Image 1 (cartoon, rainbow, N blue to C red):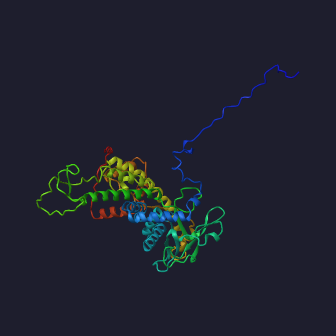
Image 2 (cartoon, rainbow, N blue to C red):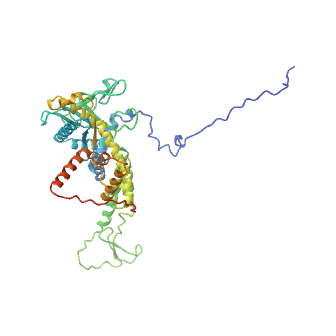
Length: 465
């Protein structure tokens, strides 16, 4: 009969509680709405579009040209990364051929000014975000190898009438189906040149073009200035400095002011407000009745001015992996141990940059140089070598205390924890060349009857504060 009651209760199905985790940074609130308003989901190439890179390049160049700190930082990076120029060490089994190739490459690099060009490329990489070079012949070069390295500014690498081009062409770079550069479109004149014509451009194969930049995101094919995060900070530093200077000048412009303690309409001589009175040097004067002579108290620069500049410079230098004392060229606030600790982090980044320079730029230059050299009878033996085994040496970093560094070096050699090749490489030297030179010196010293004095080495603790 209806209604009926079941004899037993139905089994209840229980579900595990749902876990609802949240990230605070993913929440949009009234407080952080304006802060994250410019966040977008663009791809790497879309975020670094042609117009965006052009604006960033122009502003970065302006700051480097007008800001002493920005110019010094960029020069320091180029000098520390490239130095006096890289040195080639060939590692084939033929020592005579190795020395011959090394000497020929060194002479060719000197003739074309390769170290200066590499420093310019490193500066452009910081300011423009990327740098280009074309490997082409130059009949004016004196020597069997007529190869030259022509630097190209990033503005010239672009695709005229981009909307008409294939979808595989990305602002001056034609890509294959795997995203690898196939050829580059380079304007014959800089677009900022008065004689520039946007339709005049040349196409170069990827094997003849060097493109050096830092890819911060996967799929990124063009670079943005490395000092991009610091551009607003440079502007703040200059504005604050000018504001402090303007306030100090305003206070200094008033030699003296007249003021009275009398109330309004009180008993005091009548004086025109904001009137100007010329004061003569070393002359006594009589003030109007009821008036006193005083000066404006200079409030600038404030005590926090130096600390503000230090913090801003420290933040500016961080995006370039520079410690403050190198960015400001001032170690007055450091002790010995702190200075060395900061330098260790900086020189690690320099070694990474040098490794990137060697693989992206120098190896490609060497391969093109080898192709040219093999065409001459002088280096015909290179045709049988194929891939030339080699390595690059850069200038070593000077130690603050050379005596302690030499002592530590000797201890490492005695304990077999290092090699002569590694120790000479720290100084940017070829160990084979240095040992041959040292053998010649010792032989000559023996012939002249000179005795080499040696000093026993001792272990010293590095306990400077």
